[in-house]
Structure formats: C-alpha cells, structure tokens
Image 1 (cartoon, rainbow, N blue to C red):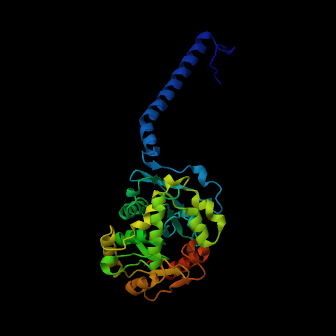
Image 2: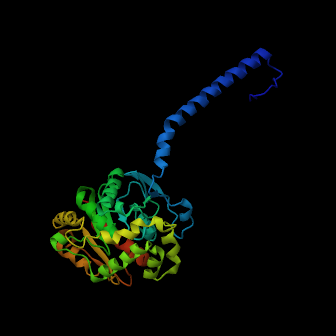
Length: 355
C-alpha cells in the first residue's frame, strides 16, 4: 500500500519513491477530475429532478414510515414536472392490473388487496394521484382539473408501457381511470369498477345521487374553511379509528390538501362542467365495449348506490358476467373488504383470459 507522507519504504530509493508518489498522485487527480466533471455535467439535471417548484409541496418520507400493512417499495416517475409515486408489486412478467384510488385516499387503500393479487401471479400497479399520497402536491386548487388528472394517469400508463391491462377504479379512481381506458382502449383487456361512476350529463348519465350532492355541499363548506379532515372522514366511514393516522400521513397540514379539497367540485354534474363532453365521448366507447367488464359495488354506499345498473345495462362486455355485490361495506370497500374484493378480481381475470 502506498502512503502519502514523508515516510519512505526502506526497499525504495528516494528517486523511485518520488516517481511512485508522483505517478500515483497524477492517476488519483485524473480520477478526481473525471468525477468532478461528471458531477458538474450531471448535477444540474439531478438537482432539477428533485427540486420542488414554488407552489408544489412534497410530503417528507418520514411520514410514511411504519404504516401498518404498508411496507411496499416506492417507485417514482416525473410527469408534467411532478414526482408521481406508484407501487409496482408482483412478477414483472405477470398480467397487469392497474388500480387507481379516489379522494381523499391514496394507495394505502389497496394494501389489503395487493398481496392477494400478487400471490395469484399478477403484476399490480397502484399510483398515487398528483396531490395525494407520496406524489407531489400542487397547492393551487386550479391545477386540479379533471383533465389534468386524466392526462397524468394516461402518461403513467404510456411510460410504463402497459399492455393488456386490467383496470380497477373506485370513487375518483373510476372517473379518471375509465377516461384513460376509453381513450386508450387498445392497452386494456378488462375493466372492474366498484363504487364509482362516469357522469356524462350530455348523454343523460348523471351518476350524481342525492347523497353525492349533499356531500358536494358539505365539501364546499370545507373549502371555505380551508381544510378537510381526511383521516377522520375515512376512519369514521369504515368504523376503524386505527387507520386515521395513515390517511392523514400524506398531509402534514392543510396547505398539502388542495387536491382532496377541490376534487368533489370537479365532478361534472351538469353539461357546462369541464369533462362533461369528454365523458360523453368515453361512454360512446363503452357502449360498444365488448371486452370483459365487471361491477363489484358494495351494498352500503349511498353516494354510488345504483351506479352498477348503468354499467351492466349499457356496456356489452358486462353482459353475462358474474357481477358481485360486496356485502357489509361502505364507500371505501377496499378498506372494509379488500381481500374479498381482490379475490373477486382474481376470479374474474381467470374466468376471462386474454384473447
């Protein structure tokens, strides 16, 4: 081993020692300069990739540590300048199922379903919408339009190069995901929906129950107050106080909650709402959709009650399917009956192999 200092090994002359020291130093400096050049060249792009722009918040990773049942490895893509988190579990070569959460939840909602699906051999992808979960959070409510979220999830599907995928969506996950499916139908082989809808006032598909309109009015009061009790809402709805902290984890304070606050107001309840026309176009796709389509609604969700009838009636691919009602579960059926719902999806996928 060569030592930088003034101690000469006994077996070397001073000329030999000096030559070795100089030669070693030159080689070392070349390496240092090479590393410095690489850092100087690459650092700007690295810094830019992790930089939070003004008006965009990122929840500290520490908020997601030690959450019960949620030990999945995080994955990230940069979409439209935002870091988007997604889970990618199961065999890389397995058939793909994409599951999108609604509001005010995040991918934690699917923690009970993921093991069932991966054990059945399916690659399971679960993103966090921008503004939710571990994804970046724009603080301006105007950012959170229906189209913004459809476009972001479309880019995720394209970037992950998903093909022959099965889609499952609940709540806003259905509104967003069904648009992605309809506008990229060649990428999807099957669809499952639960406690969601695709309101299209231009085609007389309202999908907005009295209970939803009551919730929308309540949500407006939350907007006026500047906060939404995300964890309390879900914990109360499912009757399990122990999940409150996990659903609060993405939102250290109200400034992080622009997405959950505004999204109920974005549901197109009349023809003048953004998204109403595009949803009508999506329904044109689904009215000729012959690929397998399954409804798995719960029986205790007043907000989406009866929504399954529209899908079963109007979509050709829903005919002759073994549609399921999840009993004893409310709006967040993934939380209350996650394993049962996942088993339903596994059976559906196995009964309807990709052609």
